[in-house]
Image 1: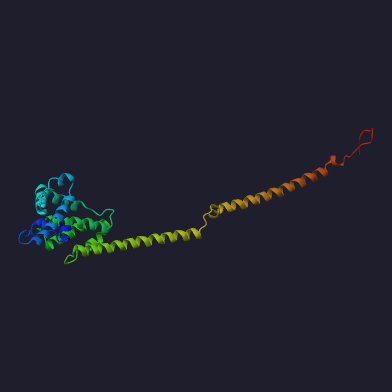
Image 2: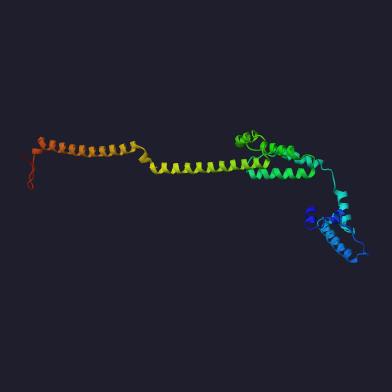
Length: 253
């Protein structure tokens, strides 16, 4: 809310730095101030829930509305500071990209800085650097060791830039490795036929032996038939001829 009011140059109406001019001595200035005050008053009231707005809608100035809300809802920052410190301590990169991890961590740092202005300068920068490096995955242990050995230590922004470049190099290397593996597999498939008959020489030998056996069987069968026929022709029965005359018995000769 303060950012929006300040961007409109109206923050002075809620912190009472812009005083109302005298209506008697400067009626024109008072009219301008009153118009701006009513506009800021309506912005604040419309931003509230109906239950809360009903308790402040009847104030005449935006400053009175602002002070009433501050007294009602202003609380100590210690619980929120504790939550932020806890989130920073437990935040780890895990499956996040380095840029996403750094953005979440930086958001927590900025929010913590808005509550606590006691730590500034080199001590705060070094603390942020250590928190950023501790949350990185073990795959960045090499670049993390290099950063810690630098003297003086780099800023957290410089460390983030170095780790981000390392992440890009790792992604490129893994991509090229996958492409090379796919190319090698494709070449292996083209050079070695996938048919089982082509890959097993015993199958071809079996086909050849089978064909050879079939040919031998044909030849052997033909030879056997010829031998049987020759033996039949040489037997005594082959020389016996049955002669039949009409109405006569067969004559053996």
